[in-house]
Image (cartoon, rainbow, N blue to C red; front, top):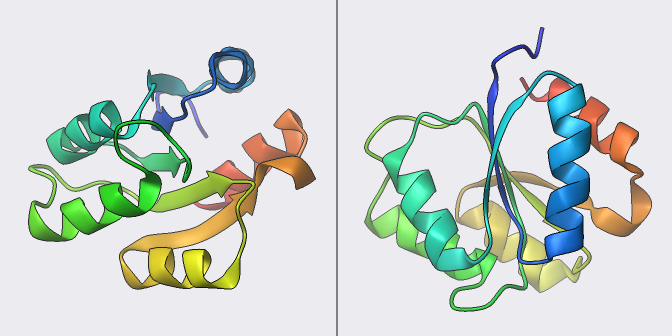
Length: 124
């Protein structure tokens, strides 16, 4: 089911990226990564992702700025849903993200890697 599904993870923490690289690779995803908001924005704007996991707190450009910029300069090719992957679940942040194109959010602290993979699969 997930074989070859293109997943983009925009996450600034190296250990988290390494962990997600392993679990999503084992789950059959074609995962790519961006280590800050600017890299993530460029990859999202290029398009063609089945699903995108976007951190909120990142250097250079945070996840909300990425979503705002996508409204102004949308992707060249369509993307699947953008899901916030964060530990920042304050209502104003989540509400702004949803108003600017995020489909939903997942709290990193509440999901082990296997649960995250299952949640991601449910959006494909």
